[in-house]
Length: 329
Image 1 (cartoon, rainbow, N blue to C red):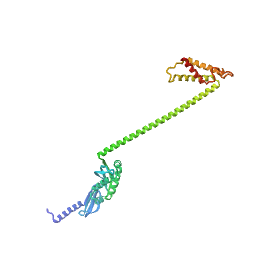
Image 2 (cartoon, rainbow, N blue to C red):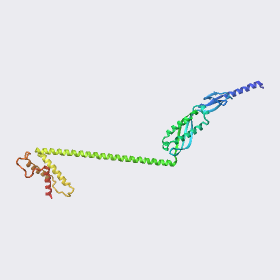
Image 3 (tube, rainbow, N blue to C red):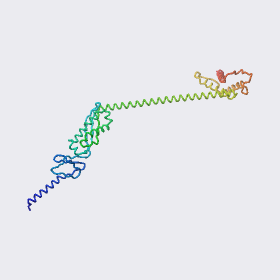
Image 4 (cartoon, rainbow, N blue to C red):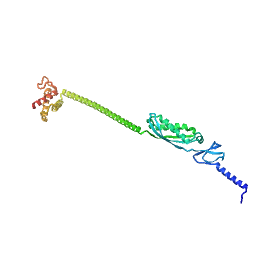
């Protein structure tokens, strides 16, 4: 069966219609935008999904990725303000917000962003000293992001992050920095040790001052107690209390004997230390005091003692001690 010319023409027309329909139907993937050009001029932007264009009149211009993209910044040498040479690399993140601007405002979008980022890295880091460069990395990243984002905003993109990955000084500079750090640590250790020694000396001086103050206070209290005891004994003697006289004389006698026995210039001391001799001496001293003051504790009128003139009690104790020592010798 042969087709007529009319039928052939209809078949050819149907095929052409199908070709035109397929040529005018465009599918845009998610995360992308396509620009449409009519006779070479931008007319509109196709969003993700199924779209139609006029075949042979309109065509797809630029296919733009609207997702956030990463751009690796290669290593470059940077001279700092104090003339130190360091090797620096980084990474940049950007996102296309306006497909027509990114397609038609700049040629070679990624190359333009890369060169702009590298140039600003040299500018920002070259205006800083090496110490600032190593310790203020966050500040460097913020300055780079602000500068590059302002420069690329006419291109319809948004710089989300600009990060410095590595800062590598030369080996000799790293060695010098290590020695400097060690010297600084040794200096701090010496300062701490000196401060500790100073604090210890201050505390020791305060301890000596406190001890001297307490010793002086103790001596003062002992002197007050001695004065009080002497006053009590004096009042007792004046009142004729023989027990107080005997106690006072015995105390002075015992102190004198202790001093004689502990004298540094005496190697051998011979004296009666028996308890009976000491008690007998005390009894004799008490008898002398009775003769002086009388039985009732008061000195008898018109009677003067030939044995003991008006001599203080401590003198009597000293005299007896000296006499006993001479007798032994």
